[in-house]
Image 1 (tube, rainbow, N blue to C red):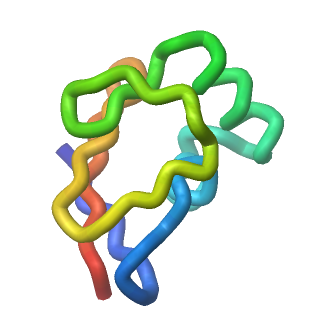
Image 2 (image 1 turned 60 degrees about the horizontal axis):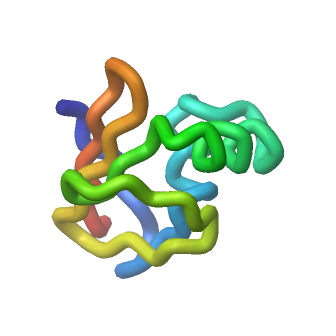
Image 3 (image 1 turned 45 degrees about the vertical axis):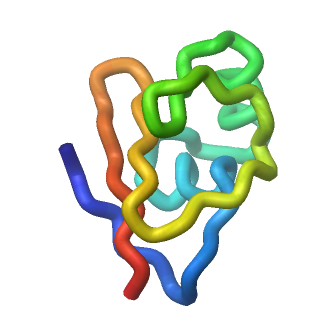
Length: 70
């Protein structure tokens, strides 16, 4: 599991995927979400705009990310 530090208290899922280097663009993030490969806290997630908070865990393929508020 890799910690990803964010500014502030909230980040949108699509932004996190780009920040972590899993997606190169918003379009690629959207494709990953539509494909069903992204889970948030163990549940499948399809919304790019889903708000994530400190402690949320995002899994995409072999990558697992934990949101850490900075």
